[in-house]
Amino acid sequence: MKILYTGSNGLLGQKISAATTGYSDHAFLATARGENRTINLGTAKYASMDITNAEEVMKVVLEFKPDVIIHGAAMTHVDQCEQNKELAYQLNVVGTQNMADAAKSIGAHLVHISTDFIFDGKDGPYDENGIPNPLSYYGETKLEAERIVQQLEHWSILRTVLVIGMAEDLSRSNIVLWAKGALEKGQAINVVDDQFRTPTLAEDLAQGALLAATQKAQGIYNISGPDFMSIYQLVGHVAEHFNLSMDSVTRVDSTTLNQPAKRPPRTGFDISKAQSELGYAPHSFSEALEVIAQQAGL
Image 1 (tube, rainbow, N blue to C red):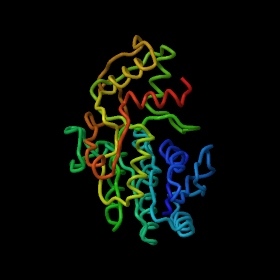
Image 2 (tube, rainbow, N blue to C red; image 1 turned 90 degrees about the vertical axis):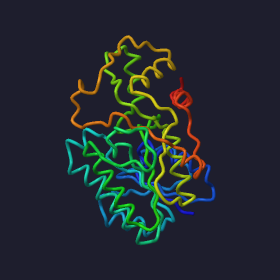
Image 3 (spheres, helix red, strand yellow; image 1 turned 135 degrees about the horizontal axis):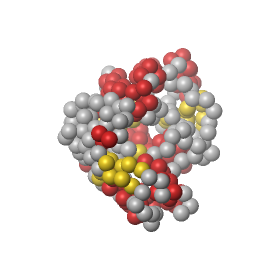
Image 4 (cartoon, rainbow, N blue to C red; image 1 turned 90 degrees about the horizontal axis):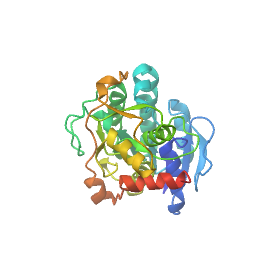
């Protein structure tokens, strides 16, 4: 089987690249905009591809002719999406339409990575039948992308939550690395105690994407970690794991942060469908922290 994946320079893309060595029966093509920035591409080859450029997308896809496309490239910074809606639309909606058109042209199965931010957070944790009601423009674009994907004949949508992990040369950090860095410096930080999530190790999301791809799983699957916690509890776990003090942390609620985009208060996922149908087996949050610690050489 031939598998193309987008966003290969990002956190998820780097973890898919690393995992390709475990899939020796498959050929992989990693794609991202510009040059490859990943040291470990595994067994994948690389092609530069801008998902917002329909002609470029079609050219790369027609040349490689993948059986499956894993579409993980997106603009995921929630506040930046709120502040630059045109760019968010181009990357999250137009980019997905281009990938869907290319997949349709060759009959490829499209595995699309989505988000808990399509929900309003009133009824979390959610199963796959939750009713979307996004609070942010980021959530709106990701929901619109889901609807594009669902027009195809062969598709999977993998919804995920608060992805964490270590990788090379990332354009942005993630909450575990941010918390660890701030706690180590004794930097004063405000941490919300009224937002709840099921944080997801990037390796687990890559596992879920490859399981869905190799099985050509049809439908929506929740792919996240198994442990439900507040952001304040998450930071507390990070402090405990790395033997750091919480003295510099102030516990606050979301209304004090004045963020441009609204966040859903209570999301998180029921992952039982992915576990039973795909064989998805995520790390616990404490195991995830241990993976990150090992990769950081701690």
